[in-house]
Image (cartoon, rainbow, N blue to C red; front, side, top):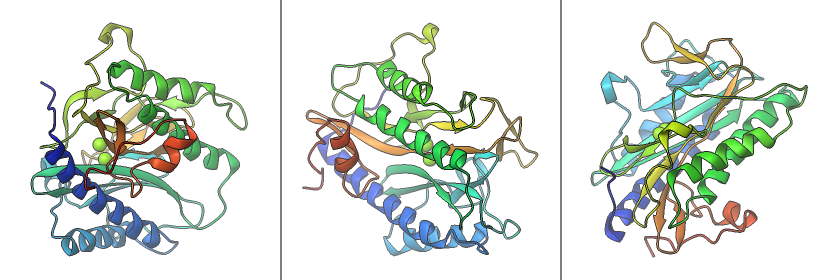
Length: 278
Ligand code: MG
Ligand code: MG
């Protein structure tokens, strides 16, 4: 069953989304050479407390932290700790979430730590982020879920890689419905799988977390012994971007972006819906 939200519920999700955006801002500032991933977790914890929100990551299936910090070959679900010290040239994906009055927000971004990143890494993060926006722009009333998956995959496949080769579109993880829980139906593939059909209809009130994960090599992953950390099987580095989006009568609204996605969607010729908070 796909949960369809009322405008009032979407407004609550916007509040949660703005907390997530504030966590992004705080962790972005904190992700500097010499910082530990634990430092980033503390920055996130502080923002959640300041907003009177609660964490949807802490305690989720026993997860021991407020954010996921995934460095270099770690794709997703990295656990912040004191041992992981960020250094120049690292690529970190930071996944954040918050709950306001029972309604969830979830969003991730990839950041460059310090300096010294190759054009290939810079392009990896750009392609991953832009594929997410292509997926968001495909969220149109009357469409089908497969439109989102197709837009993400097609964008990535069209991009030439500096140095040649193909990008790996991670297959073991994907996006999801979001609302009164963080992870809900439907699962959102980042590629088209014919046997899954076209998926549910995109209708006003549907809220999705769209989150492509892309590597410089294999699409395959494995989980480390801590039972959380997901790495590429070939050790290539990866990027992860995510936003939570509400579909309304007048199109998509990006709940976890301060401007609702207006600037990026305008580039793609899509008008953003009005802010649910007015
Ligand atoms: Mg997330
Ligand atoms: Mg998510």
